[in-house]
Length: 493
Image (cartoon, rainbow, N blue to C red; front, side):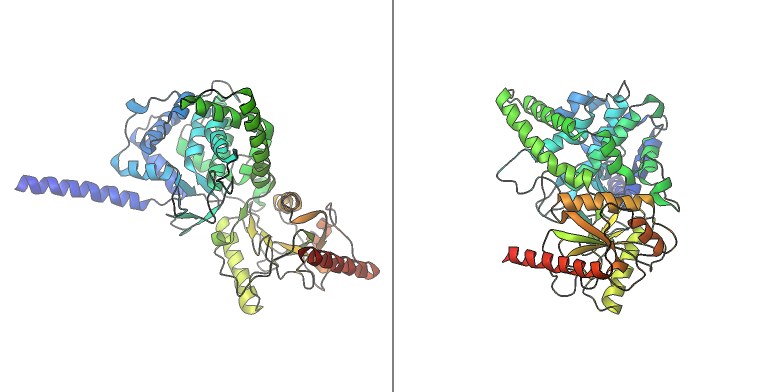
């Protein structure tokens, strides 16, 4: 009897320890890196490739497509300790449930959500490379196969890419819920794929191969920005994922990799080889789908959705904008007066501004359409479709974009200004939200105010779409606004 009790107690203790260890980890990138470090500590001499194989075995990530490129027989790979295996499996094994919960993703310090599977596959492919830049299977494993599933036309699929989503708790995230009906390729998968390509190519250089996987991930995801933000930050950090990816990837070549991935997947599943005519049709479909991919993830800046910065609900019913608009108005916040350098601080600033606008000003919501932080993100205010409260008398014909900070005597970071001047504006034009000949103006040109500060106003005078409007010209400007509004109303009748 004593022996039976002892065995039961031991089993209970093992289960308790396993449960407690798993519970101590959330789905933050920092927690996943801590788990990777524990795997490394179990075998201090293990190289990153060996650690990656142990992670893949725990996550059961080893289908024929992966084996084709990584030559991986994982049967001889040591299993992880019981207290880590279940966490790694849940953190890495990707799927979207019927109720739009996305699993196999983690929240990174830059505020984006990343799927771990394509990230880790890209790094492993890079570590296996014998020649710098020639990484067998890198694009297929990190992104192209998933793109192939998504970009092929299907009458039953309503969307091909996205959406993003929101976590249940930003300090201890466990459940990630998509904000709309899921496609076959979510934004988290694209983020993970981009990071897999960027880091995979980086470690393909033998002189840059990391001693520890945990160190590589920590340096990439956990870099702390200093006073000038991304202007003085290293090249290889997650906040630069889109610009790094743009520099590395040619869309047409990526489209060809997508087609090759579809062909290989078909071959591995025992289907007949694709004929020339079928291949041409596939290439045409993929090229067409790539336009949407390039717009969403290469041309547009990273935009933090309202739910991620903790926005309160809109008071009442929003007024929808009639697109495309003709103006973009530039602001600064003045209060908060300092630039924000982290996702946490920028989010807190957004909540503070929303409270001020709703409670003190009596507005329905935060007034700006979008807000630029110095952390590498654009924050969604009222967004693309809701009329804002940013430029009195002109809210219906333009977007109001503000920079967090007081720019009376200093400028925002160059990176933040480029996000607004180049990427946000281009994104709006390509997405049919701004007319290609839109006019950009400072807040002070339309209303009696010092906004957006002397230094920033002098700067935006040099921007491509900047338009002057004074005295007699002001009357003309007002007429243009009224005429534009009337035309939009007539079109909607």
